[in-house]
Length: 414
Image (cartoon, rainbow, N blue to C red; front, side, top):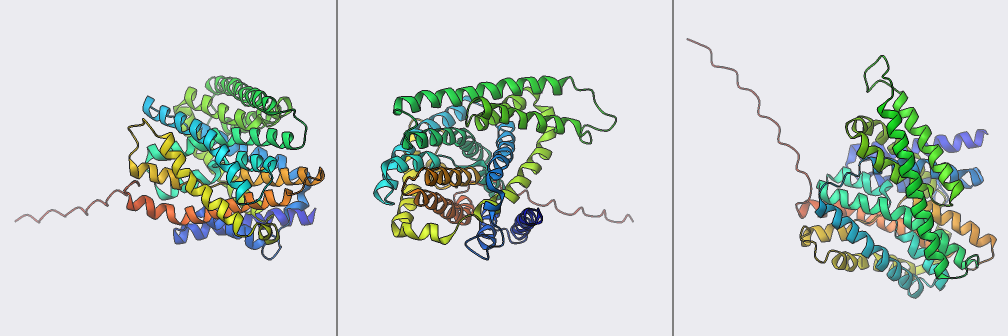
């Protein structure tokens, strides 16, 4: 028990130090969180050993990530048909082309077998809001572009998680073919969205008719407690009914609550966002600590080339996905093409799948995990450091308001 307490304490402390350094230096917080995780983990001083938590790590990660997804859905208010069409079109095109291109690059450059290459491609679809949202907020990206990037992650992350699990089952011989994958994908994603929407509707009705406490609305802790209790029960129940349906349920519940309550939801945004940020602060170093250099070294230059090619391939996908969208100029397309970091869900899925593949005796399981973590390291590192300056050069950031000039004292009278 003392070792487990120390593990969580070290992870919390390391994450908070990374956030402090980010505040003092202006460096991207996600890059620093990843760095401290590598330093304290198996790739560094081996102070934190996530495997000590055993199977209990995955459910905890799932619940905390669902909080981040719910927070994103709560703020996902895509006003205007043009913005909605942009998100839908980009998500559909990237979902199809990203899956095909990711599998081809993983097979040809990184040397993964075709079954594992398809699993990697599905995992790589998730541009997680756990890293996109802090990056967008810190670099002060224009609201429309920030909403597109956040919506892409919120939609593709749960879909990618479900698809990756089904492709894993296909690789293990538990599914007969691609027809089963497609049908189960629709069932689990659609079922998760339906469960989440129903739960979000019920939760919003309860919050609408909730008697107010004696203090102000900001001081009343009951709405936040109800939201957290209902969210965790909703996600766990969805997972019990349909495997991997918890993440789509969390996003759908957040969207419904945000749309129905509007003003009331905005008053809770800050508290929920703080809790979501707290989850990111502890989980990112904890999962990064599970990475060892030995899992990256067998990939060699082929693994690095695969990830870099995948990053460049996104530019082609964005160009094709934006055909007919008049609201995106070349500068907007360029920044959308460059910002695609992978985060906590990607790391958690890769760690879990590697264990299942190794238990089943499938060769190449460690290479799959190594390639996924290499993608996280390179996308977070390269894009985290370069995206803010690129956005400023392109004029796509919110400029700080100029300070008001000091009031001149009136001239003394005669």
